[in-house]
Amino acid sequence: MPVTFRNVITGDRQEVSVQPGQTVRQTVESAGIIAPGNQFSVRDKDGTVVDNDPAVQHEGKVLQIGPPGNVQGGDAA
Image 1 (cartoon, rainbow, N blue to C red):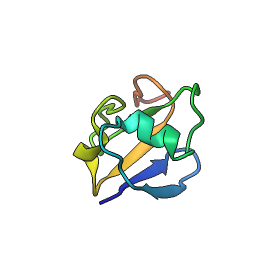
Image 2 (cartoon, one colour; image 1 turned 60 degrees about the vertical axis):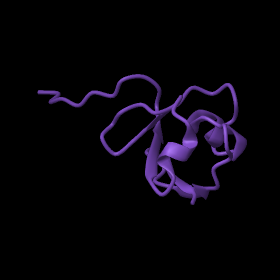
Image 3 (cartoon, rainbow, N blue to C red; image 1 turned 180 degrees about the horizontal axis):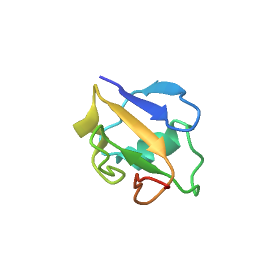
């Protein structure tokens, strides 16, 4: 079962077949979604960074690709 990656900036989605032994980050890079060496984070539906999780743990899910680090909301007022 593939993992669907959604780019939070462009909204583009791409389904990727998971290879055994790959982390989520490795799956994104090997699929060519983000070039190796670029800064990004992958988050699950709860906003938890899952970059180093085994990709097979997220089969059938939609993961969000976006800027690295912690993303915090807030009111600019």
